[in-house]
Amino acid sequence: MSKTRILLGSALALSLAAFVSAVTRPRPFVARPGEVAVSKSGAVRIEARPSHTAVHENGGELFAEYTVTLLGEAAKADQAISLALVLDTSGSMSGSKMEDARKAAHRLVDLLTERDELALVSFGTELTVAERRRINPDSRASFHAAIDALQAAGSTNISGGLEAGWSSLRGAPGARRLMLVSDGQPTVGLITETELAGLSGRVHDDAITVTALGVGADIDGPLMIHLSERGGGMYGYLKDAGTLEEILGREVTAARSAIARNVELEFDTQHFRVAEVPGRHLEWKNGRAVLHLADLRPQTPTRVLVRLESLRADVGTAARLGAIVNWRPLEGTAQRSEVDFSVAVVDDERTVTASRDEAVFSRGIGAVGSLKLVAAAAAWERGDTVGASNLLDNARALFGMSADALAGQSEVDDVRRTFGSASAGQRRELTRKLEKKKLTDFGRENEGY
Image (cartoon, rainbow, N blue to C red; front, side):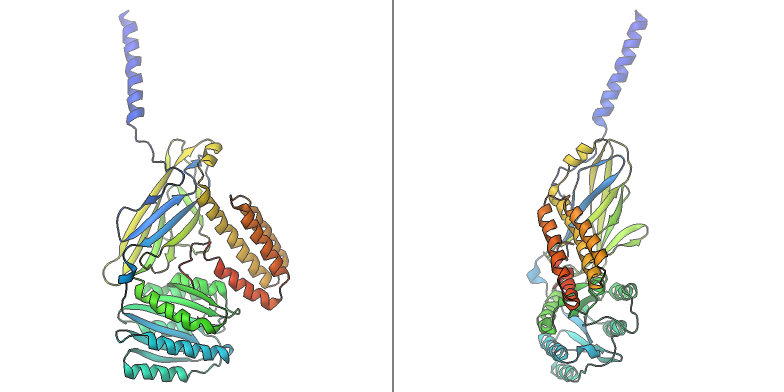
């Protein structure tokens, strides 16, 4: 009898221990569909929203949407600036393009105040530099004279222009910004996208923002977009130079209000792999995926859509993804904000599907599908109709996974019809327009003109 009581007592003790363990063990945080994780402190707020709140134990794909916002009042952002206007004066700029460029440059000089500084760089085969000077009546007159003297001739030396603009802004006061304006593709100096984006990155790492403005359909759209992204600035596709005056004015406004620079979004991916970030270029630092974002202006959000692959994990655990935004103010030390979210690891695909946030998932599918559309347009532009058709088929299949399938598939049909009936020249212009339009799908609507 006593032996029976001992056995029952031991079993009860074990049961109680198991119950207490189950009650006191920390349960993993699991966001509800649509719930947003928000950074807790810092002048930059990060909001993170996953497309799923559960992943399968064997791994799977999901999206995460990040919104990065500089807090503060936009009306109070009015800082002194130092600008370098780096203007393409190659032979292809002759005629009305050169006249419009001169007019826009004159307007830029008149927009600057006596607390600002300016340098003027022109590049064809040769480089001409009007050295950086503080704006006053004498220097203003000198810059106007230099602009009047600009003539279009020679090749397109974009790297030479970037390097001269960089040199002119070294040691300059205030917010420093290099504005590159070109109507063509590089023909001398550095000519590959990788080389030129690397140069833009080195300029940006020196706390100088690089904006890339392309004039006319003959520009290399992906190159100019990459230059602006790596340079932390804005991208603009201008069908003709007639709108350059307005855009340079908006650049002055952006330069005065962009008070968070050298912005990087870094991912802590212990339980995930960053597969791609549609419309942006990934870099790797110390084993972590890093994105370069445009300078931040108060209350002007930047969105980032990330396609993730979850790694194999044990059922019942939580898979965590962390994100850090590092940035620098105009003066002072580097700052950072952090956010993370966790999703449940389960063994049932139906649970994964039920956990889906349709809004985030649809935006993610839309971004990946838009990459296919842009690639198809580029293939059509170079005459690869078979490759373009295959890419459009892939895009159509992708859009079919979204709750907004009809709209996406309709756009595929529209691109197929429009490009199929266009001439070679029309296809170039259509491609540039599509590249610019798709910045919104990639979350870059506040990074372009």
